[in-house]
Length: 188
Length: 173
Image 1 (cartoon, rainbow over the protein chains, first blue to last red):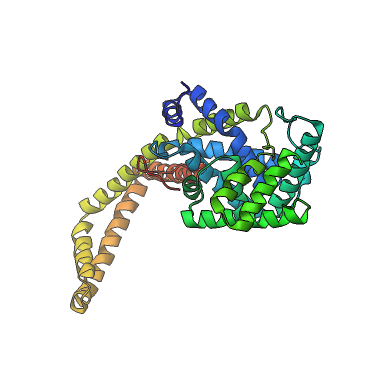
Image 2 (tube, rainbow over the protein chains, first blue to last red):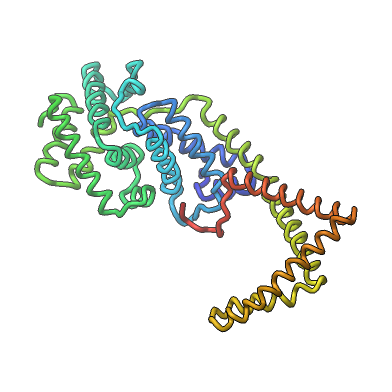
C-alpha cells in the first residue's frame, strides 16, 4: 500500500528527503501540466512548478492533513502563476511553445487504427487551440477538473473560489469550447 | 465515424440539450485526447535538491535571529537600568502617567513635568557621557551598537528568506 500524501508530508517534515521526493514525483506532472496550460511555455512552467514545490516545502508545517494535499499544493502553484502573469502582463495565446515540435502526445496504445489515431491528434490540436483561447480563469478550472481530476470542491479550495463560481466557470468554459470546436468543423 | 468524433458529438449534444452532468462526463472523455505536458527527466531531482538547499539556508537564521534579539533586549535593558540608577526613572514615570490620562489638567501638569523630563534626558545624557568618558563604557556602548546592527541584518535576512511564523495546523496562505 503506497503511503498517503499526509504520511509523506509527516515524514518529510521529520527530515526524510525520500518522502519529499516521492511527493514531488507524485505531483510533478500535474504541476508542470497545469502551469504550462496557463503560461504557454514549458520552460517557464517547469520553473514555476519547481518554485511551487520549494515554497510548499517551506510551508509544509502549515498543511492540514485533514484536507487534500493536491488542493493545498495547487493553491501554492496558482498563486505563483498569478504573480508570474501579473509581472509579465501576459495572457497571450501561443501554441508553439508547447507544440513547436509537433508533439501531440504519445501514440495511444488503445487506438485501433491509424485513422483513429489521426482523428485523435486532430481533436487534440483543436482542443489545444480552443483551450488557449479561454480566459485564464476558465482554462485553470478546466485543466484542474478534466486533466487533473479534481472535484469542484477541491478546485474551489485550491483557487479560493466559491463552489458555485467554479461550476459556472466550468459551464461557460465548456460552452465556449463547444462553440470553438463546432466552428472548427467538429459539429454534432 | 471514429470514436473520438463520437465522443465530441455526445458532448456537443449534451451541451445543446442543457444536460450539464452529461456534458461534464462527456467532455471528460473528449479532454482525454489532450496530452499532458510532462516535466523534463531531471525535474524531480532538481526540485528536491532546491527545496533541501532552501531549507538548509533558512535553518541557522531563525535561532541566530532569536539570540541576537535577546542580546539586544538585554542591552536595551542595561541602558534603561542605567537611566533608572541615574535618577531619571521617577521623572519618566511621572511624565508617562500624565500623558496617559489624556486630560488638559494632566497635560498642564505634564507641562511642568516636561521640564522634569528634559532633566531626565539630561540625566541620561550624563550617564552616556560618563560612559563615553570611560573606556569600558565605550566598549559596552560599541558592543550594544554592534549587536543592534547584527540583529537588524539578521532580521532583514529573515524577512527576505520568506520564513513565516504560523501557528501549527493553520490552513491559509
